[in-house]
Length: 589
Image 1 (tube, rainbow, N blue to C red):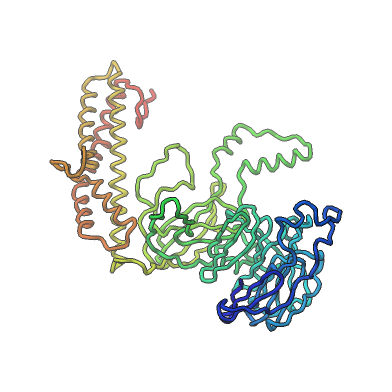
Image 2: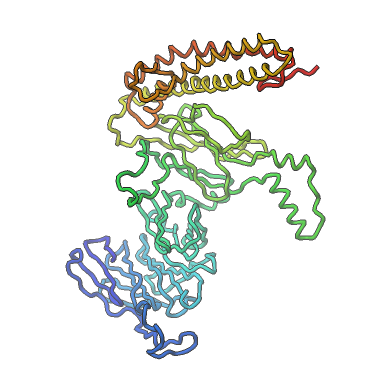
C-alpha cells in the first residue's frame, strides 16, 4: 500500500491494476486497466523447450506473472503516478485516471523486472527506475533516469559493479544529487546524481539490499536486506556536503550535530527472552571525518618493495636484524582527536586506528578517567583506554584531528565547533550545573590521588613481603633487617585497613558494625555521580569532607615509608648481599 503525501488517499496494487481510496481504505475504486504487457509466460521456452500443462510443478509454487511490483507518487505534483511491472513496463498517470507507457529503456532487455520506480522530490519531470534481470541469468545493474516524466531515459549505472543487480533506489530530501541504491551486493551512494558511485560499508555485510527508507528528522538511512535484516546508518547528513575538493584533501571533519546529554538507562527489562531490542545509536558527540590516505609502517613499505621485486623476478634484499627490530618496535600510525572547551582547555583526547575514506568516532561527553590505570601486558597500546570519568559541562566545544606517524604528530584539521546540549528529561536536575561539575571535578581529583595512593600502598605491601622473603633466605643478612621490614609491614596493613576496612561476615547490620572506610565513602560518591545529574546531597559533601580530613595522615605515612624508611633498609640489604628485589637496582662494583 502507498499512502499519498497530499491527502488521506491510499493507493494499492492488486495483480495488474491500481486501486485508490480517498477515505483511508474504507472503500476502493479501480483507477487503471491492466498495466502489464499481458504476456502469457507459458508461451516462452524454458531451458530451450516449450512445456505442456502436465510438466512437473510448472505452475505450482511459482508466483503469478503480469503484476505491478512497484508504485510511486510524485511528492511535487499530486496524482502524478508511476507503476512498474514484473514484465518490463513503466506506466505513468498525471491525473490518477489515464495512463501511458514510458518510452524505451536503453540497453535494458525486454520484459526485465522493474524492481523500483522513484519520482524526484524536487522536480516533477524527473523520475528514476531500477531493473532486475536475474531471472534470465543477467546480473548487470540497470539504473535509469528520465527528465521528462518517462518519455526518454538515460543510464546512470556508471561505475556500479557489473555483477550486482539493483533492487531499490532512494533520493536525499535535501540534496537532489545525493542518491542511494541497494544492490545484490551492498549499498552504494552518489553525490552527483549517478555520475559516480561509491560503496558504503561501515559494518554492512555484503548482502542484498532490498529496500531503503529515510527517516527525515534524524537523517537516518534504513535498509531492509535479504534474510530479514535491518540496518541503520545514523545521521548520514555528512554525505550531503562531501565534494571533490573534500575528497582530494588529506582530511576533513564534517559539521557536527548537537550532542544530547542524558543518562542512559542501561538495558531492557521485563519481557524475559521474548523481548527483542536492537542497539541504540552510540551515545555522545559523533565526529564524521574523511581521511584520504593512511601512512604506511616500515613493515608495509618493505613488503611493498618486496612484492614489486618478486613480480619482476629480481633479488629481494634481506632486512638486517636492526631493521627487523625497528619494524617490531615501531608504533603504528594512529589518529588523535583533541576536544577543547571554549577557553582552550583540553577536555579529552580520543584515539583511533586510521582508515581511508569516511569514518566516525564518538565522544561519550565525559572527562577522562582519573582512576588508576595498569598495563598488565607491558606493551604500549594507543587505543587502550580505561573507563570514562564523570560528565563534562554542557556547552560549546571544539575537536581537532591529528595524525601520529613515524614518531611525529601532524595536525590534519583545525578545531571544528559543536555543542553538548542537555536533554530535557531529568527528574531532579541540578539548579546550577556549573557548580555540580565543579564539585565532580574535585571528586575526580580525589579519585586520582586516593585510589592511586591505595594502589601504591598495595604494591608497597607486596614489595615489603618480597623483601622480607629475600632477607630471610640470605645467610649474611642481619635478623634486624627482617624485623624492621616486619614492623613496616604491620604499618602498611593498618593503612590498607583504613582505606578498605573489612568485609562483614554476614551483613552490614552485624554487631559491632565495622567503621566506614575511605574507599567505601569514595565509592558511594562515584556511584552517585557517574549516572546522575542531580545536585550533590549533604551526605555527598560530608563524605567528601571526611575523606579530605582522614586521608592526609595516611598519605604522609606512606610517603615516609616509601621515600625514607624503605630506601634506608634497601641500602642495608645491598650491603648484606641480598638478591634483587623489585625497585632496587643492584650496585655494580
